[in-house]
Image 1 (cartoon, helix red, strand yellow):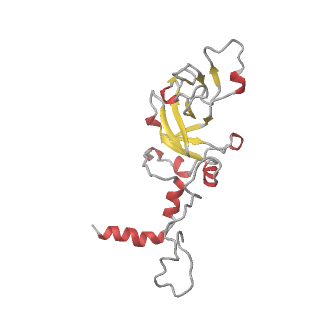
Image 2: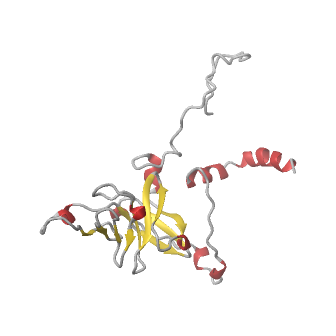
Image 3: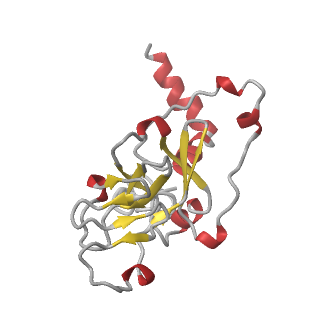
Length: 209
């Protein structure tokens, strides 16, 4: 149990010998790259926003501990790039979607949805920058009004899972929705898998009304 230490019986008035401060347990809360939970979640397609939320302007967001920007270019393709331009660090939240990819507002560098550099204005002719550098990018899959991102190793990208509820004959009843929680998806599932708290916590809450 978090924050509890064992002590020799009897245990009356044992406040001095028991540390009440909960210890940091980041196994499920740390989702940054390289952390156990972060690497685990990066092996799956993660829903991150409603497709209807992505209009003509880029949208800044934070996903699995990374600052990103989502956009839809003029040809309808969706990009999910690292938010800050690799050239001078300007935020691509203020970038300009073009026919192919997005153009940085600061120096006009243009990136495709896969992060490939398409144009580097003001660079000398024959510059090899586009062959040696790229903007960080992640693949996006649009499905049933939701946008899903895969943020793991590109060589291990899985097929997009199609569950039976996705292909039900009456799938027109599926309506995309979202709720915001100050934690990650795995923490929600872990809490839901704890049946005892339902009997006590939620029973107490329901008795108040």
